Image (cartoon, rainbow, N blue to C red; front, side, top):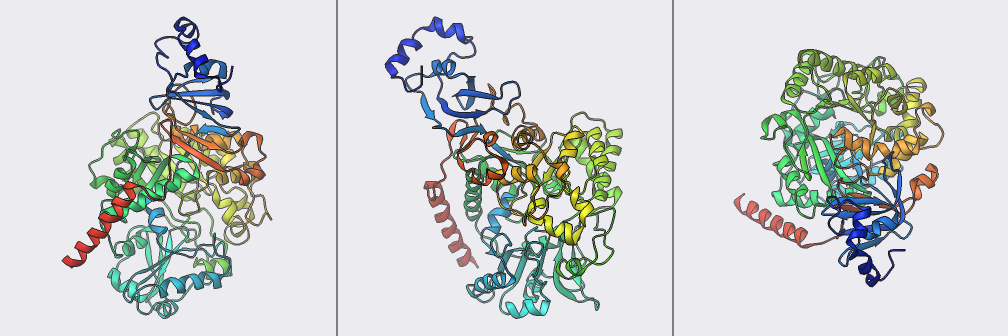
Length: 596
């Protein structure tokens, strides 16, 4: 019996209440389904029931799943029937580490990324065109400077930057968001001169004479320029964030987690909350604000809902591998590339943001309050410092299942992963480093031996971790399928190297890393991440079955659609909400201009 039967036949079956009761307990299935999915592959990511033929949804949650002959009995006259037509339905992908506000804002900048440009000439042409389109005095912001991908890209001098944009403050942001370049006008707008002290977690680089040279490094320094850029009516940011959440849905995500939600727009926490809680929000949102912003807010632990929740603070323990900030046990390689292209001094081993006492105090404070801590950790020294702090705090304030997080974990060792597991610390890997930056890492930045153990995902699994994967967007493009494929294949962009073949993971482990494992890492394994009765009906539908497609062909797999609470997400270019936000922005800017 198939779901293409007539409703007359349905009715004759459904009226036989006694027959339904024999199959389903009345207290579980007293209502007809709102929606039934069938006609394709359904991957549950539930080891006890890995694949089913059909699935029903009632009031936004999974009502039942199993054989088609069983599920079709729940379809009533008003039930919506969704024929997958050979497509594959899975739990909605979870982006466990992304930056929605930064992504929304960077989408409005001049694109100079290595993902979309091949040569320095292409980058400079895009930059010059962007400057040409600005009025005198208007900020020029470009994003994507990346000498690790465009390897012959030369770092600009302050003189060159001044010549490039003599009439505008200019801010060039690196692809990693951990460094950038500014001209003299930008220094002036930000109120920074050679006497300005370096901020916590960053510095304004100077030449041998103590003069500013245009290079700014790490998040603390970058933030000083973000604060100086123009601000717009709240509706403008809500509009941009609305579009960014739609981008996540189009990429296949149904839940997005934002560790390090930065205060670069007014009322940033309230803005992301408003967008996430809107009735038509295309994804659900969890956040870890910067610790100082969390401290200044009114949010409390375990406060939130299924659409928006604050989980805890974000701490930057070290910096970026490509800005010289990865705190390692051994120095960066010393060569022309690291010195001239990345600006890393010979003998540098990166740097830690806090001293031991500062970090321990921060961990202790938020741990005692009941928050889950998210810590940016790239190098071995950073991992050791964070784990030392957690270990000391746990001795003073024991807590089971805290699930504090270490993010990225570029060079975290096998032994450190075992220690993290013993301490109850969870791990998430920025796997795109292997593909996009693997060639530069191996040949120029850390060398063959360290590159081979970069992003030791399989070692983490062997140590007992519930591992997750992320793309850290906008540091690399949205792409759950790409992230999983890289974790399986571990090929560099040139395909010249396979970095750490022993660290490759299986297709199913890769899928779990973006579904049930990611749900577990944010304490949501009982609400999402796998297809089970009672969980949220958040789905991703693909045109092919990943488990029947060789990983090297996953590039051809496309996201067909996503569903939130059993309802298909619609990503329209324009709708009433967007039009209203645009009109509010126009009015707000007019009022602002008049008042100025």
